[in-house]
Amino acid sequence: FGYLCFAIVYKWLVDWVAIAERPPSLISLLIAFAMSPGTVPADAVLYEGQETVQLYLFLLAMVTVPWMLLTKPLILQYQSRRRAAVGYTKLQEDASGSKESASGSAQVAGPEDHDEFDFGEEMMHQVIHTIEYVLGCVSNTASYLRLWALSLAHKQLSAVFYEMILLEQGLERCKPGTILPCAVSLFLAFALWLCVTVGILCCMELLSAFLHALRLHWVEFMNKFYKGDGRKFVPFSFAALIRKAEAEAEA
Image 1 (cartoon, rainbow, N blue to C red):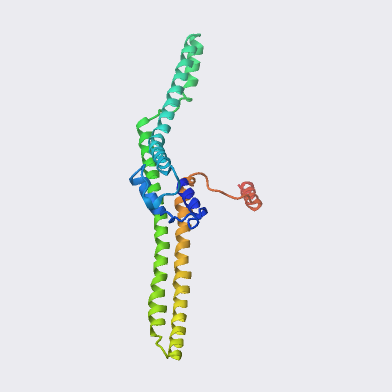
Image 2: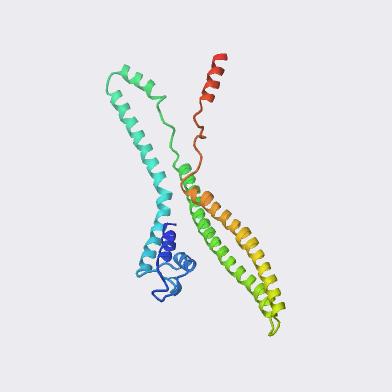
């Protein structure tokens, strides 16, 4: 996602008209990034050395999957074994003393024992989270592509309205020597085109794009950093404290 944001900003900043080059297609860039690593289509070249950078980024993304999958279970297993080793060492030190201290320490050590660590269960839990995260990344990328497709559809729709209403219903009815009918047809065609453009492109489609962008940010982008599985946030309130104190006093 960081590289995608970089590509979007870089494309905006470069004056492609001044350098006499066609602006690259970010959709082709993103598809080639995943489907053919190390190669860049001719219509998706942003800068020199792009093939090498994208190849390293792709390899880094592939390495992060097993890293995310194995790191947490292995660290928890190491910590569990370390706690067990420390417990055995303490028991041996207590046993080397008197029998009374050994029996006393054995009685105290019982309640402090930690739950047994299950590596298989933890690994299965991590596999589920890893698969969910990877599929979420693919889904997020597809959602951004869908938003781009929506913008392209708006462009094509505006071209269709222009050709079907202004050109066919307005200009094509203008014949030599028919000034009044031509003016009336152009006025009516322009009024219809304006209403359709404002109603569909500027209102309905704009609202659709806004909802897509809101969903992309809140649902798909934020789920990379926020889960909401902790404690429910309760704002500080003096009234709540007073009610709690009164309830405790009555009890």
